[in-house]
Structures are given as C-alpha cells and as structure tokens.
Amino acid sequence: MVKEGQISSIEELFMNNYRITEPEIVDYLVPNLQQEVLSIKLVQRQTDAGEKSRFKAAVAVGNGDALVGLGTGKSAQVVMAIERAVSRAKLNLTYIQRGCGSWECACGEPHSLRTVLRGKRGSVEIVLLPGPRGLGLVAGDMAKIILRLAGVRDCWTKSFGETRTPLSMAGAVFDALRRSNSIVLPSMW
Image (cartoon, rainbow, N blue to C red):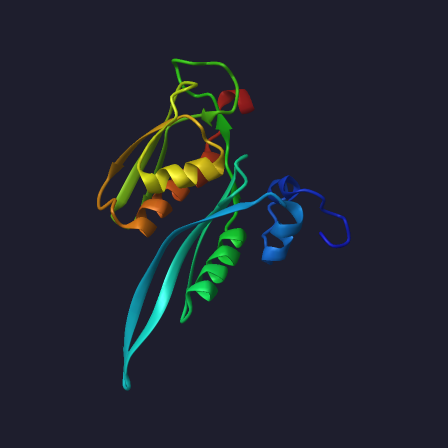
C-alpha cells in the first residue's frame, strides 16, 4: 500500500491501526529517523561442544517529533546485532501523545507530556511527570536518550527497582511512553 501510494505518511498507518511489517516502510515514510545504541553485551549459551558466545544489542530509534521505537538483536558479530536491533526498533515504532500537562506552565505547546505516565519492565518501574517549559530532562542517562528521541524536552522522572539494567530501564520508559496513547482526556472527546 505504501509502494502504490495509498499511504503517504506514518500518521495514516497509526490512525488506521495498520501494523508495520517491514523496516523499509519506516525508511520510506520517516526519512529523518535517528538511532542510538543503548547497550551491547556479550551473552553465552552452554552447548554440548562448549560455550557459544553472541552479542546482544539494544537500540532506540526516533525522529524527535513524537515517534519512538525500541528493539534488541543478537548475533555472533556486533554490527549484525546492531542492524537486527535497528530493524526491530523500526517495527516497534510508536506514536506518543505530547502536550503541556504541567500545572506550572500551561503554555499549550507540545514540549512535555499531557499527563503522568507509568511504565514497567522487569524490576524497573518509572513514573514520567510533565514539567514546565525550560526545565529540561530530569532523568537518568538511559531515560534521557529515549525521551530525547521521542521529542519530550521537559520532564521529571521517578524510577524504582534495579535501574542500572539498561534494557529494563529503556523498556520501562518505552512502556510509559506507549501508554500515552491509551489516555483520553475530556478535551479530546
């Protein structure tokens, strides 16, 4: 449908609840997508012949304007693991609702979040609080990367659990941002 010209923007995909089945669709519809490697670690598996080592990469993608995705990939080579993680992150791309939900600001521009969001992955739980304009991102390094890729410029965070685990922390922030679509405010009725 994208190749035939029936779908011309990524917003049409999300409005019609279509699934993104190929990463090339995202490349065509969102040309300015940025990617950030979050972590690369060595994982081992025990086999009959001994240990088999592979690399596991976690990558976040986003355009800085309400689109963000998170993916992981494994391979025997680092470059292949990163490429697989990027393609999975493009398939997990989601649109987030931004706004000005801070009681201190009320400017109406989409620089922060609309409401308080909560996300959980593994043992990590995170609470994202909308901040006033000019605050910046008050968060850890992993959360800052994903929030920046999502286009959130002002936000407070509270995190609980083993936040030193990069994939759990990134997954919790991504889960919280994904939940922004399930909130319907009276102004949206």
